[in-house]
Length: 485
Image 1 (cartoon, rainbow, N blue to C red):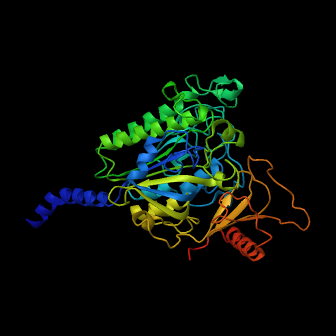
Image 2 (image 1 turned 180 degrees about the vertical axis):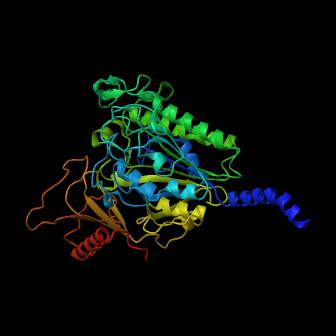
Image 3 (image 1 turned 30 degrees about the horizontal axis):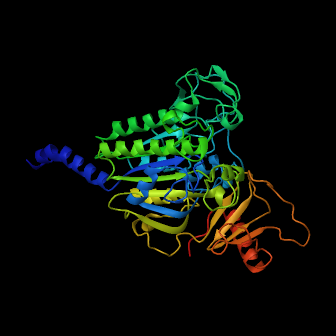
């Protein structure tokens, strides 16, 4: 009789166990804006000329980190760092970014956020800009799979574009195949301020590809994924990675958003991004997904916002920080960072912890109870305790390494920031300066006293410069970040 009862109730027991296990594993949604500045959301910079009601509301619903940084000040290496928990300069990419069809950057067998979640039974999807290579440097035969790519690093499904929205080829990819092959050509386009439709490089394009429709298409795909998973989360949670294509160039806000900001096409496009994120959140609310979902919203680097843009519009896209996208200075890599998980993360809180986007890897692993493989996530630190208790003051990490678009290094420890060289290392001139005999070979700033990095005190504090130079070299040579004190 007992065996018969066991056989009868075994399916029920298995379902009950699955439900209990799923309840301990939240859904994970990571939205990565492209070129959003620290100073664009009004909750970070009240003087912002851009309306950002979604992000401002998100801050009231969860936690925002005010001292968050990307592992690089340009996009490809940041995406690598976010997904792997490892600085990209430890990989084959030492500076710059990939193009659409570069060989895949994520090494075979390397653990990613997607593979960690998949191993824990999650449904995994990436929707947006990939920009981590698709297995080949040149593509003409579109009957062959575009691989390795998202589907080989843990994502069950992928929909998006190969690289940035101003880099050909221009087409949509679903999993490993194009929706339409790029059989046409589009010419170069200049910025709107120069009489163009918005900046992009000419090249192959699919017949149905329209630059100004991409953000809306990605938003619809994200909503469709959420709708497809809503009634399955009790037995199988999901991980959704949404690397948006905006507000990266081309700045092409749709008519409802034109004139919404006081910062020209860029500001209007940021407002559209905020609206797109709002659509995703409204869908989660409608489907009853919000309570059981950890949401992280951040950016891949600072905004490409020049001094002349600040002067023209009176808008500081990167807030009070020096420089812009690609630079080694704060504006290149300091970004807005929001985290929401109702009932777990206190609403309306802030943290001044110095964190890096590589830390998302260890944080998600802890939250979902995943076992991190040996040698994975070398530069990632668990933020889950701080997310639950934002008042924690003990540093999660003792230092963070910054990397510019053109390969300049810096290291931050406490309030001190050492830059190993002179110049911006990025878009702001001068990019590199050769040190003169008897003058400092690098830059040292006390960010507590000089957050704008205007007073180089390298010569005045040789002991600090020497200590941080040694710490930077140790981390470069060791292959992993220094543990937190």
